[in-house]
Image (cartoon, rainbow, N blue to C red; front, side, top):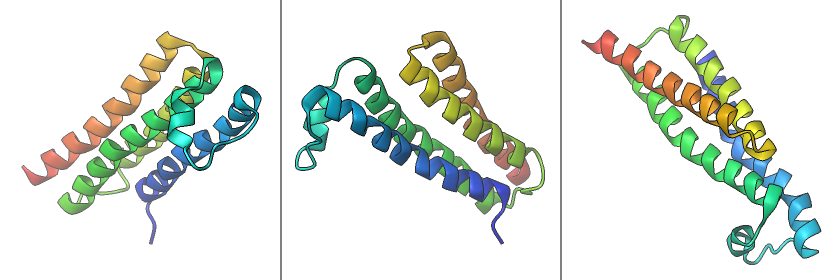
Length: 134
């Protein structure tokens, strides 16, 4: 049976793909085409909002790594998915969605706040797992 933290991992898994799709209109408007042969080179040449969308995509991948490891640690430690872990996972998803929006909208203060909230939730999950094992 899928727990809420598992569903949160699935949601986090789709965020980078959502941002990748969101970059397509910006690629089309800036370059007139989407270069599927060399997408990363094209991404490196993006400017303005398009560059921010690509940045949100890359950052979503980076955040997903820590969140996935945190959840793996929690599962292996036998942390109860009905407790604070579930709340932390849901807050992580909300923070990561907000982070991408603030990244694209160029609101640095809120972007840093949402990034920090997501990071904090991943670390909180690890801390909770460590307390169960200790």
